[in-house]
Image (cartoon, rainbow, N blue to C red; front, side, top):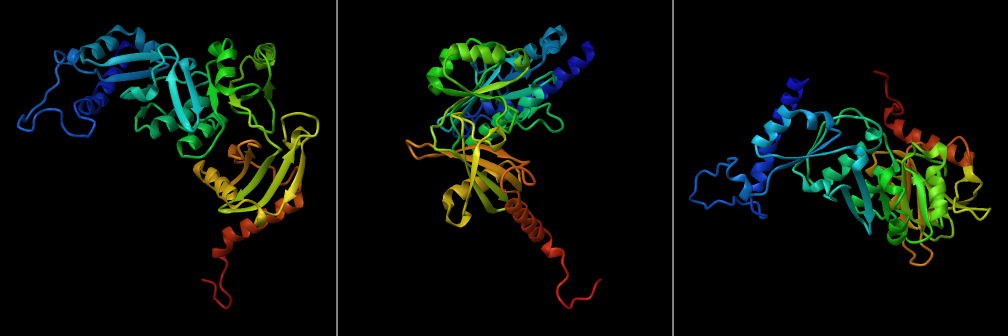
Length: 357
């Protein structure tokens, strides 16, 4: 095992050659050495006077305990920081995103390389968010394989980084979240929304008014393994569900709660009204199409809401599995979906009079 981790450490050292070159550059991208100096070789003796190349290793406890591996990286002058996935936090604040480790508060983008060394829960649920954030910051991420779970947190970070408006959002590790009511209230205001990062249909979605309610939700036995995020509550007169089919929005539904709840989902008892898509706000339809496209969805139910005070629109969700054959207005949705499929396959239909090949 020690040999394997040593090989792994050696690979990290190789990757950080890029980081070292970056460190030796000025902000303008020019070499820091004089133009007439043909060589600028970094040696361990040089490193204390320079900023050390840094690597954040997520879930690398075994590597941290391997003296051979850690010794190799120290000898190479690499600053290595180890954190578990439960020590990462994410925020979307006024359209700006931030991902950081909670022990020292260092941003993930401050490291020259981020490496995922293991996949205990809930790594898969956060991997897309980590990857999207680092990609937007121009930072490399190593050790990601396969397809990670799509979550609301990933959507909010990815959409915000792409310039789309989403409500202010805070995700904290569970052990930090339990003691963070006052922090969330200060950042998000009261009441704020507390919802699971991977639920839909209005499930596990709560409007929090006080700390007692907050703790009751988090400590409920069925919620012990649930990952929650906090989000600013947007005061509204209902939400809109836009059915995006390719680059078209043929269905627009207005949904409002009927029992005083903040939830407008029809699955949670909300009342839906069909709007004429041709007369609906064109910019909001473009916003919905962009949200779906940024998430890679050709078919999506995009939920948007308008702040009744500021009149600003926000994207709440882009659902790649919208209810078409169930819920409200099934006939209208299925007709729109059939027309979409017809357009998708129309290019395959033979022209009139054309002979089959």
